[in-house]
Length: 345
Length: 265
Image 1 (tube, rainbow over the protein chains, first blue to last red):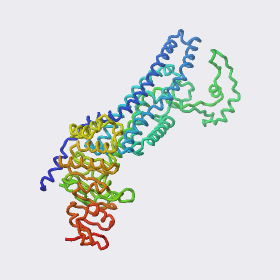
Image 2: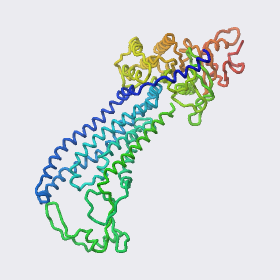
Image 3: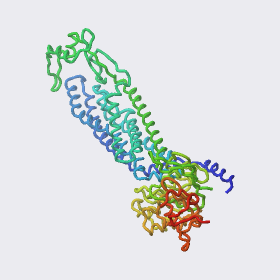
């Protein structure tokens, strides 16, 4: 072979067009359709349950709102009966749904790369003409978008289901138990769980430990967000007016004395010794006292303070959390691709 | 053209060099046997050549200068890893379809015909095939890509003697039909004797001997002189493996007093 043909060879070959992306569609579908079916079955079963119980609940709620005259004892009793009948179930469902993104991340995302690395099939997949970087992207991106879209659709259904409790004005939409199930947050949490699963699978290289690590990492992140981070997305409002709307998310309450210094719990207990509420029973479950303890303390020189996030911040908070989780997911997917690129056999 | 060309190639895992200062050029049109004891660095060298691993030092190109692992290299090189990894839950037909979708070229007709000849049912899941059938399926997938270089890592390790024979016969048929260059690693020397015409002997992470099999055999003779005869590939390899210090390319670097070999001519 002459020198000229040797130098000409690589130039001709590098100009070859790569394998088209669309060819990976069948590959991704064939290899992950079982996982996608699992996600569809999980969300489908939960959606069916929400529709069936939700229809019954909305029917009952329609009767409550139709009650006339509003504010009468009978109507107030109807409202409280409705809450007694449906709130415990709704609350339990919301708690259960918190785990859904984690399950999707652990069982649909973690095995995507971990199984290849565990069984050695990456040696087949990464030496095909498609190329391992594009192969990774062509698997992770469509799967992530699909599960996030499914979760987004599901969260619309959940918002409808849970609607009556927000209409009552007594439940804050910012509460940690429901905030991340509505708006864009549920899809964003599912996306983040998926990205965590993909990265864990690539790092750990074994399916079962990767699933466990995904669940642990997701739980840590979700707890951190719910307990510590979310309340600081925007600076909380502070008021000394004791009657903020019931839809506000109250973060903390405290009292200051005449000197403006915060009162200790002991000092408050001391002041409340003299508090003897004269209460009267109105309905079977409703008590009303002429002077509430907050009012009593205020009359005796203490000032009540409360920091809270108003319900009107629901959407700003949704976008902050959704945007943050989207950025995190992109970062984790990028890290996964980077690991795949440099992963030595 | 050289199908694999390595310059000062090195790969370190942790603190140990799996492959060190490896320089070699494997010419096209050969069946190259990459031999050496377990842990010598055979798999490392092949992984570097097919782009699964990145070199720690030096570089490796394939098919006349394509960087290992580049799109052009992946396009022309087919690799069957040790134990012929396949998706166990996919049928043979699905594996064909998968490979066709992952490559620019795929000869579906050839692949189906070959599986038919071998009696491998298309509907059977890969995990339910015998070891020999799995190896043959993996080889079929690789050959149907119409590669210019076929790299096989320990293809015979877990096969019974009959399956070994059939597998090598398949490789030789493809070689004769397509002119595909073949590089295969093995420690089953007897099977390579009949097929390999280029030998690379690797030991403790270094290339100890490399060259055309006929040249190597012609240059080495058994002692004592009175029973001088052409030695076998196996005997040659064994002699070098017993003496790892004999870093020898193209021939042994020192005379062999105690060993039953010498370097005449």
